[in-house]
Image 1 (tube, rainbow, N blue to C red):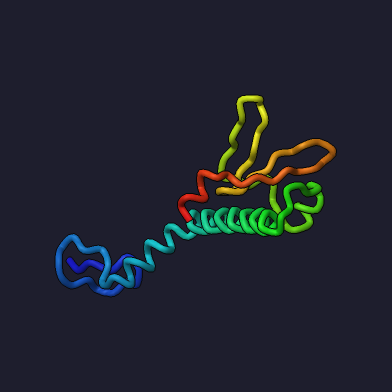
Image 2: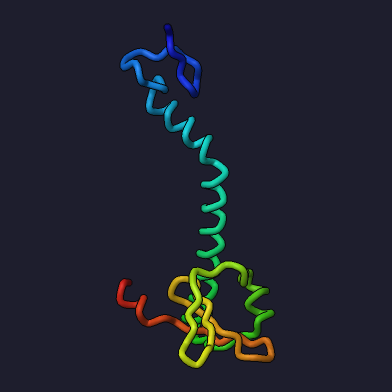
Length: 121
């Protein structure tokens, strides 16, 4: 019985347990199977990188406080962050990698850089 490649349909030669005729066909098949999940991860990672870049640029400019609307106008998406740290006094900092913020009231945001991540640069 002749086996056909799962990607291109060509006849498979070689081992009896082969499913693909070439590495290219194997890669094409698996990339097509994982396309949706890979795109989701790629999009989320892109949003996290953008948020980090916005916070890093503001922090590097010496800004330590900014209005929430100004941050939103720069393209910051408040739904995407890497982690939350709650201090002993109950203050919550939302971080995007090493840069974080907390809401201080009156729709202002206080920026912070987590010094523990600076050592790895």
